[in-house]
Image (tube, rainbow, N blue to C red; front, side, top):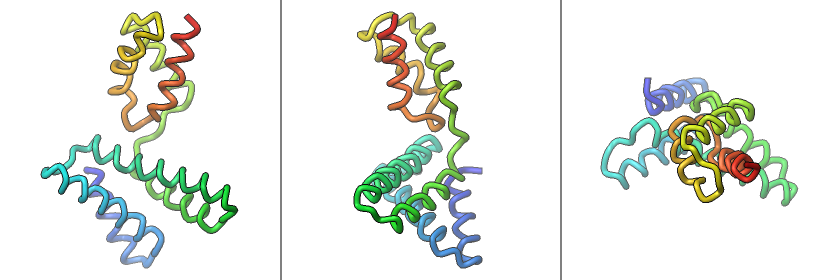
Length: 149
């Protein structure tokens, strides 16, 4: 079942059960997807829908950081609940160890040995981790491994 379909089904359940926070969060996600589809003038593929949901999660994480600085526990709680809802629709995230193993494999596959070849490694790595790990975290590990060699 597609992620869009899962989101719509979850929205219907939230409407029936009266879960206001869940309903609002799911509507935001579906609106974001719809806006991207209108902009692209076609239905989005699954990986693009995943990227949009991940962007929503990142936005909520930034909101949490800002709310902590502003000492707003109400906003922190709301953003954490939204992240929890979005995470239901994302694939299981890779652990740091699993990500490190995939990065090492990508370094070996690409034959990279210096920081100048980081693009090769990231090019080989990203299709394997798309939707399951943060690119920034992967980039840090790649830089660490290439810098150490």
